[in-house]
Image (cartoon, rainbow, N blue to C red; front, side, top):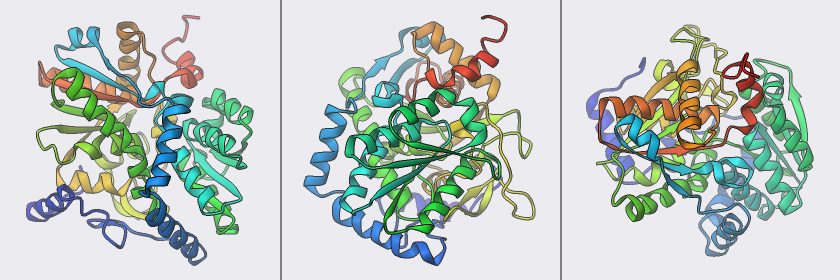
Length: 414
């Protein structure tokens, strides 16, 4: 870790986080978060913030949202006891199965919630960004459900390695726009979606896919994704007989992780472990492990941890998983790291692919490559904490990753 604060300051932030004090009225999670945007977007963000305050926790909005999740998106998702992984790892392993949600990942929770909010705000069109394609598919599906036109920006590199999801978005009626500028991955896609929104900030709604960006997006995405952790907490008590010793999730921008972690924040007996993309190794440009190797700065509307050089230039990243290939991270994760409430580690490309293969063979489950990083981190935790009860957020399924898996795990076997 390249960023640290005084222990007394970290404790102060942790105390406030345990009390639910973040974000504060300025949209800050301690020193992180806030709103760093062009003036033209301020009215749209003010309007969104007012809409979040007015609608998000209103009984009629929540009733409609939860009805769609239950009857259309397939919630609650299952909690699966991973019997063979438990035997192999010498631990008690449980999987929160977001891969079983409609469209194949946790992204549908946020997409449907924001699409419902956009409709109440009178939006005429939706723009979204995507990396691995799962948020793009979820946005396309939610917009089709609600009758809203949807444009999805996706880095050209990702359109190639996530081709199945590009086809799914188009079948669901979305327009997919390949982005050939910048690093041609998730960061470039977010930049293009923001440019589109600036051109029509009142008629267009930007359906942001992760817990990143300017306030109120990190808070909004957290609230919509916290259904993961709320369900998992209740299911663990009912099925496992108690809370887990540790909850584990992969971290790119951080939406599945914050959704899993937030309902456990005040359960201080539950350790929380976020696993980033270690890529090829620790060198700048070889990984996407922002919290492990980054430093504070501003990216895409938020003050958070970034992968940047000594001159403050944001660097390109690498990961075998498209959804973790991002130079920043959600500001609440930056706070959770500096306060010490969540531990963040990395798993390399090879470790993630090996964990994916083991999960397939042991449990008959093909997780997304993003999710496989969480499995790799959980396996390492089990090695050092034998007999512990481990809850893994199985954030998505790996069907979308077959082009990449055919070039890696299946190379020479087909």
